[in-house]
Amino acid sequence: MASIKMIDVRPGMVISMNDNLYYVIDRNLNTPGNWRAILYLKVKNLHTGSITDERVHPDDKVDQVYLETKDFIYSYKDGDAYVFLDAETYEPVTLQADMVGDKIKYLRENDPCKITFYDGKPLALELPQTVTLKVVETEPGIKGATAAAQNKPAVLETGLKVMVPPFIEVGELIVVQTEDGKYLRRAKDAK
Image (cartoon, rainbow, N blue to C red; front, side, top):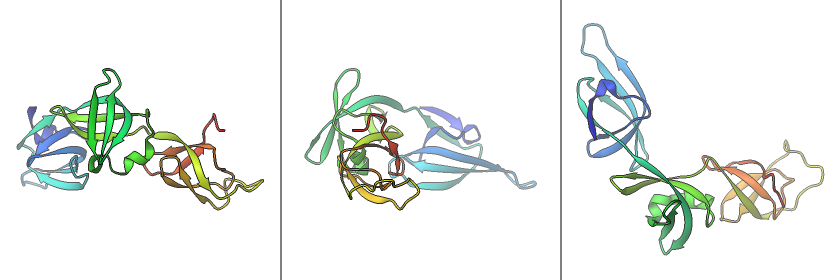
């Protein structure tokens, strides 16, 4: 860890403050007249995921943290934990269910993902922006239906529930955004 002044903190950096790791989202330097400058940081706590605004002095020191992100492959569920294999060495890493959360609904066995480490310990699971999953349950499709019609619920092979256009049928592959869980399009190799 490198110690830097708060004035040198930029969006995108990871810093250690108050025994927590924070991702810097935004910064704003305020210099009101002849008063001391104040730096406002918008940060995301990497342990809890909460976003807060911090008011700090520009000359204060903070530790800049360097994280390591590695490619992994989801392997299997083991009780209340999930096992991932390093894509290069095939060394297993186990993540507890509370760290993985609902992200597991976007992953099938052998799907790629990334895990971020701090001091050799897993910190966060990162998903690709989109995933392709098979529809296992939905109402029957309607001939001639367009994408502008009312969407219908569908259950995907991982248990994820999404709203899909009425022309999507059971067995089709669809592309889903992992950020918000929304249907994006039919997969190119559908059926």
